[in-house]
Image 1 (tube, rainbow, N blue to C red):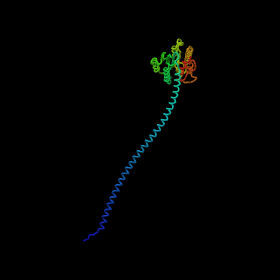
Image 2: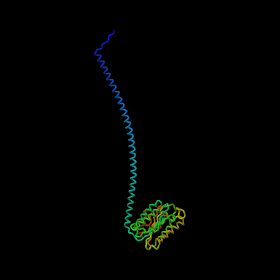
Image 3: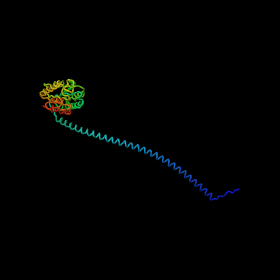
Length: 316
């Protein structure tokens, strides 16, 4: 029978210490694994946060680039708009100077004696680019008519292939006298005047204008004819490009009759030509031939309407 070895207290103590060490190691290993897992999870979270921050940064960078592009566009638009503003300011300054000059002239003007004004206006389609501007100038003139004369009468003849619009000689009173009725009626008429495709025949219009301003009135009233247009001799033969011998003959006859009329008494003729401004054009020369008593009664700019009429009225 074998005898069981007695290992003694030292062995027991060493065994206990070994078990304790193993237990500590197990705890340490467990804690290490736990901390490693936690660190791994933290690393994953950090990577996710980093990815999110990168995407956010990328988005912000895109927004920044878009904003920079918009700012560049705004700057470019601002330059263009500033250029437009500068041009408009310059134009406004010029218009202001012109308005000041006209106002000064009007303020100096004292109503003269009785005057009759007949306007002959070309209403064919070639006048369309000038029509609204001329119409506004005429409307402004009619509003100032009482300042031109103490007893001013105005008549209007719209011309295409003959007379298509008629406004008889009518007294234009200051608003305080008739509540603005006479001015309003003439303005309403002018608002309805339109351009339309057509050849032009001035002769019938001058026939009517001379009839509206007869010799029987020249002793008591100044008489003025104003022609507005861009075509010279009348287009009688269906062509707007070459004037025939017949058309030139009629044009010469009209000019002669108007000149004989103007030379009698206190009369004048103003002409405003807005066609191609060529010194040698037949149209321009015909308009110039009508102006009486001087070349100051002829103009090639619709803005000169006031000046032409002022000169025509002031001339004796």
